[in-house]
Amino acid sequence: MTTEKSCGTIIILNNQVLLIKQNSGIVGFPKGHMLPSESEVETAIRETKEETNIDVLVDKTKRYPISYPKSETIIKEVVYFLATPKDGFVVKKQDSEIADTFWVDMDKVRETLTYDNLRELWDNVLKDLK
Image (cartoon, rainbow, N blue to C red):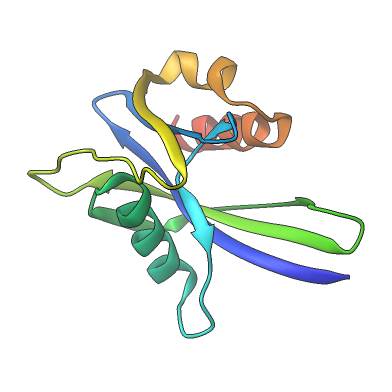
């Protein structure tokens, strides 16, 4: 089995969460492939900027890993971090990968996410925020 690793962020601001809808229709959090020279946090920051145009402050202590089979030969590992946008941001989606970006009230995030593993991850985030 080969492992692919990606990192991303869960951006929370004023009790809302930024979600992305990929061109494939999948709704989730911003994330992307980790480069060999990067740390998890560096990847999360870079990919969030690429997909949403938002510079973020990452909470390194709020790390949420998930993994799942991407194919018969590839395991996908994704690490998400809680983040907040830096002041003065303007959301602008990456047209080549992202169909839409939108803010969702925290109590609507779970029902908006496409996959069960993301819903479980969100449940863990909510437990940590209490």
